[in-house]
Image 1 (cartoon, one colour):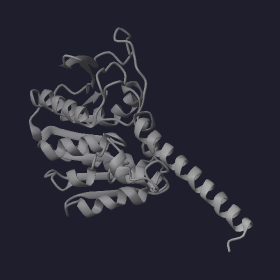
Image 2 (cartoon, helix red, strand yellow):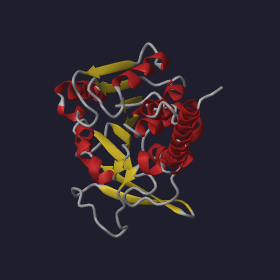
Image 3 (cartoon, helix red, strand yellow):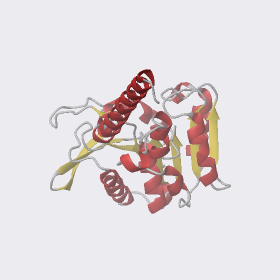
Length: 277
């Protein structure tokens, strides 16, 4: 016969199992419901507030549809005839003003830089979805093609924006695609942090960079630091399986996620890429 002590232990074990199950389910529900807050950290700006960028740069607002405004800032070069344009898709924080400092790396090489804010970021409005990210990117490209031929358009993605940039380069012709601190896919990245959940089912944002790279005909250049604690180097390195022989994966030793701009190796490689006609 089963002793009272054994029954007590069994009931106690079942109680703890039920508690663990409830915690697991609550965690999964929270991950699903709060994923936008976990992935995106926008900072909105009033439409009538001036950013205070240098004179000569242009701010444009485009009615993407009846419910949303797409805000774009064009950082212009001093050259009378620009070498081309960089379509810059930034990361998951704040707004264009946070990334404006990076524009000089391109304008100094004769390229205009057109930065776009995602819905909810800066002065851009509308409902943020993965498809909306793609639609706005396609609209930005159409605008660029009205001023530049495809072989003078560089598509650039940083962090979160690498998924958007890779999608656009897979759909449209360009001079080259440059990815700074990319991920293999958003699904694989989130799975790295919460391996106990079925992320592919819960996540609304897939952004499969590796899938898009297979479809890009232009040269692809990837920059990633070995000390990146946001998007692990190992996750980005997986992209080499989807890259073509002409593509380049440039490793910046000891660089983190947000400081590649501090490394001379990064600037030397970027300058060489942009100056190559």
